[in-house]
Length: 324
Image (cartoon, rainbow, N blue to C red):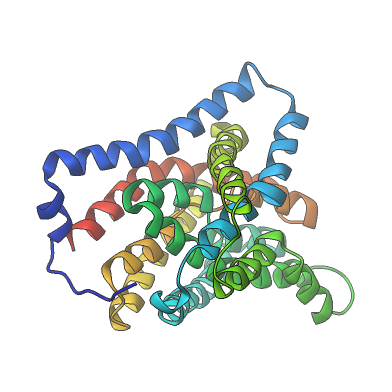
């Protein structure tokens, strides 16, 4: 992808004010509308937790990996600033990890709560990211979103798995941590996508199959995100929730933006990297906290608070990126 330098406001000037408004509506109404629909379905038509657990497993193990393989496998790797995006994203994640630990310690939280603050500070909801980047930037946005996901997931998975392991009795076993990271279906899908891209793309027949499954991941995934949110949980340790949200929704994307600018990345690569780092934490963080001995109530509260606040912060980030 060519690295083109553009003057501030080029996107708005080129597309016009009405087109910009339509772009915002196309990006955010479907994404947050599907989340609201998921919340309504959970409380009315589909109240059974087993239904949503099945949807989450389908998205995590089949549909989202298909999206990653299709998006990464269809790009020319030599035209993407992969190294620059990796440095900017990993640098922000490293600093964010340290700030999350300091934040939990500053609020006097035990180890279990620390893991929830950590996941709230560095994990991300890639489904919202794909919905917005695809609506705004089209196929290049999806491809770069897949690259950003391929950078974020291994780092976050390694850090959070290590954090949970450190709270367990006995010695920390690096091989077990590495095994959990390498067996993550999203990481496997990213590796497979890079291999497919290097070999010239998916063959006929498989390419539309992967794209179809990938498109289903966004809609079903956002419905499941909405079903998992709980406004009642937001009362738990509100000050800590808000501090974590500031870190995740404001500081993390700001640090990513600085890194991208220092590395002179092009406009669309910078925008997608920043947008994905500006996403609220993954809704599956609550499941992970409950399964691995974290503070599940706090995690549910952080997840809900960040998604509510992201309704306001994400449009602001997008407006800033398109105008700069």
